[in-house]
Length: 631
Image (cartoon, rainbow, N blue to C red):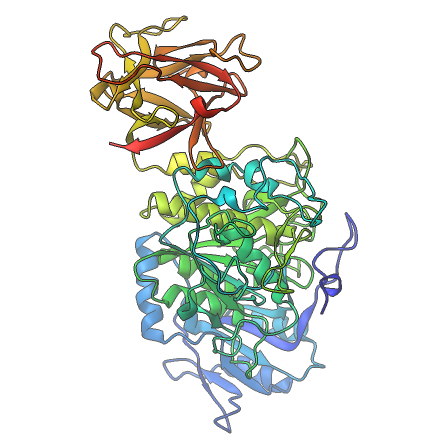
């Protein structure tokens, strides 16, 4: 099937789409304590259930027989004793997840009115929920993977990364740059985190695992097809989708194509829509989540990236089994990110118009491309449970493509394109602090994001700010020296003597030193707005201050004033801007495009009073580049 044939979006803003359901399939969740036992006249065609204690569910059995039931199967394949242990673990996190053994999938002839069946079943005292199973649609587009070169030192060597948050087309290739990496400030976060030792499990529609930007990051031992239980994830007509999603989340930094948000994360491609073998019983999407929860990651934290929406472009969390599997995964340490869907509709309401029980997942909305603003994409689902939004523009979302091992495409987008950017951000957070809980990650993403422009009554959380989130995730300020690249023996020095209270003009002395002593040690202190302050270790509560007034163009000798301040105000806040060569520039928040400048000329030996010159510069040149060295 071509991309154009996939109904990923409604036809136009404000359009509605009728719910679409799997013919003859109803999912039933029995009340806690039931643990239905399935039996029937033939072992291969069970057609009735009873309770674990032997009591017969006469009402249930009468209804399903009336509609000509052909099969009843457990929805999940996890053994009951393993589920019980996982539920106990979830309870320690305050999550009361339902027992997965209470879910069954009931199959009727395709002509049966599944709505009538579900409505009758829901009236029974033993039934918690009964719903027709919605058809599944991919919420975006993706490419394939192949064996590639090992990651390079810097993702900026990848030609598609680009240099800014403005979409620019390369006339030679027709491909755009990865403007979204700059817009979500992932490029600044790379100075602190890469996603290493974190797993991103993408539950999707297939993947070209041989793609040059994916093969080196994919863990072949954890490639799984939840549809048929095999390991072939390259089946069907929608392989482009998982390829693109994994490219956005974790394409390798190898200098040949693009870089994912978490370019050193380990990738697990999981297919749920189809497979070369016969379908296993139960819901493949729910069982895929269970597979990730139970799979051995070697101690690495796991992230589920769930890429599916209902046939009416709704939130697939409406399906009870998927809802329950998400809760159980979260309660057992998995961070779960879910695409909210592309229907311009409330993500808290099911296709049948009923409230969806909240799972606590990181539900992701999408924004469209604009040179300056971040506004909700017209198709993005919305609602009180949407936590964060990220770029998912259907015309400006370059990623890997499945047409070949070296193919890329521009037009991915949707909440499918937004969700892997968020999953990549989560991988960066967990690589900074592996002890973060799902709830803490969810809170950090929402609290550090900025406002999204959206219509009244259509909230989509906050706009993803990866830099701010990574700073907030730091378990404690890190002590480091700020080392000049241009002058290899010169380090930033701060003399905060006498700086004991705030003074408008600042105080103390900031210059250079040969080598690192107590006055050359700093802590990067995250601020509530996502910026960082640079504090002295020797002088508590004394911070680097930059006065960039009058610095409006580059001057050889630099300009402005850099000294110290007691406590943090606007002039003590900075962005650490990763450069294409992997170094860092220290940019003022108060004075845009003004950076810290260090002139270490003559700094050839230690000097009690320091030496050299530290001031400001407009733009970044060799003297404005630094390496942050832990000490």
